[in-house]
Length: 322
Image 1: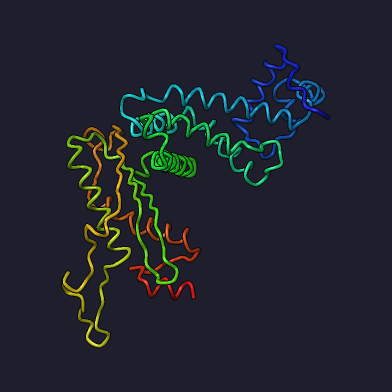
Image 2: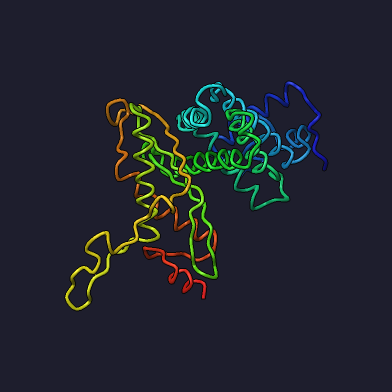
């Protein structure tokens, strides 16, 4: 039976609104027309007449969810001439983490996932369109010259990845304060020599009110560099007979230098959540600790092998690929 999306009427709009509120509470996974119709004061026959099919109703519900999402994103996005991507990230996370939007986010994540595993179903293209919507909002915050470059596209894609990961973590735990930092890495791996080059690095931190941006940026960049060195070069070796350390000083370890240093971008999401004065949080060890995991994950994406021991040296990569 073909969908009848053109049967617009006050009754159709009323039932769509009721059905939308129903799926916000119950989700799409087990949606059945009979209990849905009973809950919203209608019948399956009426719903099939107005929407053509169950798939037609699902498409109408997702169109409504997408419209709500775009409206919220538009209100969250700051002036493009202001804080740029950092401002967009702060404002967007502000409404993403708000309790009143949790049901919409849960519906969005469910539809996003189902559109990936059921590409021929009624949710087809939902994930791609959602990504396009978010990237368009982020692109509008970039300077026009930057927006059209490969670096600009990579920059907003990384910001989107941060926000999407934070949303999943928030829905899984319900804890807004649980994650205050996320690091993202792009690497290049020579599979013949086992050599790893870190090409780009993005660190996103919620540190509360930033008093000295220059010092804060330097702290995060320095910690990230230390973490990259920990991931790829630095090792603590012991004599198996005596237990004495063989690397007792930095002269025996290859510490990362400016020749190895990648481009490191830092984005601060300033919040005042009451955990400290003006939302203050540490930017000491937290700037270093995510780096080894981020580098290891990037290497996994490049070669398809999990590296579980540090440092991730050339011989270990070649052994994993053998």
